[in-house]
Amino acid sequence: MSNKKNGLIYLLSNIANAGLSFILLPILTRALTKDDYGKVALFMMVISLMPVFVELCTAGSITRKYYDDSKEGFSSFVGTVFKTIFTGACVTTIIVIVFKDFIELVIPLSYEWILFAIVVSLCNSVISVRLGQWQVRQQAIKYGVFNFIKVFLTFSLSLIFVVYLEKGAEGQVLSLFTGSLVMAMAASYLLYKNKIFSFEKNKPNHLREILNYGFGLIPHVLGGFLLLSADRYILDKNLGLSAVAIYMVAYQLSSVLGIVFDAANKAFVPWLFALLKRNNYNEKAKLVKYTYISMLLLLVITIMAFLIGPYMVVLIASEKYKQAGEIIGYLCLGQAFNGMYLMVTNYIFFSKKTKFLSLATIFSGLINVALMLVLIEYNGLVGVAQAYAIGQFLRFFSTWLLSARVYSMPWLTFFKQSDSK
Image (cartoon, rainbow, N blue to C red; front, side, top):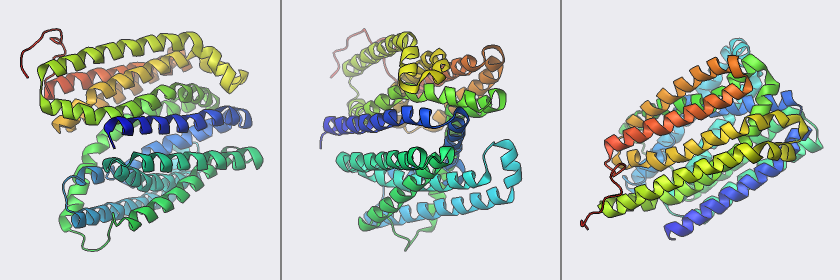
């Protein structure tokens, strides 16, 4: 299947998933209290941090290994990754149980919810392996169908637990837990059926390679957490769960931009890598020109978000979340900078110098947290959103500078023509 068709399938899949999420959003905002919605947001924050402890960021090594090993060696490698993930989940579970009193003081969630987050993270790792193997094998239809089933199952369970059984925040946690568990079991079966993993004949050097890959990404994941999830924790500690709920409603509405960027990036990367391999100046100059045009277009979209965003918030989430309209423009601006980040980060992956990416992410993540702590004192909820936008800009700009350093592109000379073929 061509890259264009694959990209279209990824886009349609993302749109379908986003559609279900947007249908669910007004249901949850009306069925849950602000405090309950805030608790769910904190639960999602914990899940976003768990890959550092549960899988040690090793699941992604499977995608890279696919291009290196024979079939037998690859299945053994995947089996070793699964052993690593399950071991990490068990160790993390023991730590949470032993230090549950301290953890409940730091995070305003019961330790049982933290245990649920561990299981969800474990399941998500298995699911990501199954989806990743369909992606590298260019089986976009299977990827899209499985991903849609996962979202639809969670959507249906949310209606049952939250709306029908009226279990509140606990119901939403149960829907996420149950949906992830069912889909992870299905993913495991499909991986086993296709002989993608094996627990036999594991090579000793596999574990070393897996851990080296994972440890190298931990700073990147932590930086991403500081950029994308630490805001909920800071809001809860300073303004309470209701502020978390308001912020997350605005964030989820702004994330529609991120969904489009993700699908576009999936289609863009194979085409980009083919172009970079040809190393033709005129092609690269044209790419730079279109990149600048795309960046300007994103800024125009952001201006529209500032103008119509407040009305959309009330229409979708109800009047009680009206305050989210004050911050949705800033969050959309942050999403726009994230889209620009995706436009420049792939040059680093092409050059295989990904260690620089962790530096950029950690730098912008730490600055983001510092800005949130300062701006929340002056501007409250709006200050946190402003810090998010600035943090995303810093990640985009620092990554752009690093990509220009590791791979030469005519960022400042794209208007010049060349006779080179």
